[in-house]
Amino acid sequence: MWIGGYVDVLTLDGMIEMKVPPYLQADSTLLLRNKGVGGGGDHFVHVKIKLPSKLTSKQTQLMEEFKREEEENKSSYSSSSNNNSTNHSDNSVSKAWNRLKHLFS
Image 1 (spheres, helix red, strand yellow):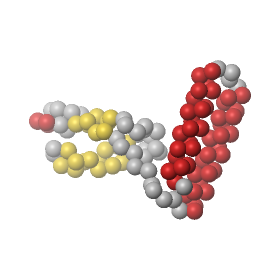
Image 2 (image 1 turned 60 degrees about the horizontal axis):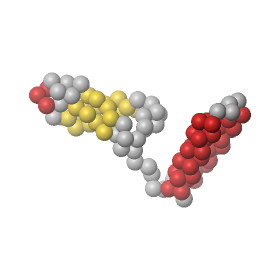
Image 3 (image 1 turned 180 degrees about the vertical axis):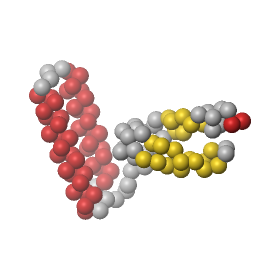
């Protein structure tokens, strides 16, 4: 849930609704205080991101729009900075986008 939201999480006390913050990255861990062992311990929730295996034509169109906007933002950011770390970051974003695109094709 890149834009955030709520998910149900099974705890020792039963099912609760947990808030997922926007822009949460895969393999993050969230903490539910006082929901662990004995009611006083903490419950850790490891986040796994599940990507869809197929997209509708509308979803594909939206992903292409997202890609174009990301590339425009990347271009304007790159031209305003000559930092080598920016180039490395841009390359990483490009590689990640290509992997994501490959998953949906």
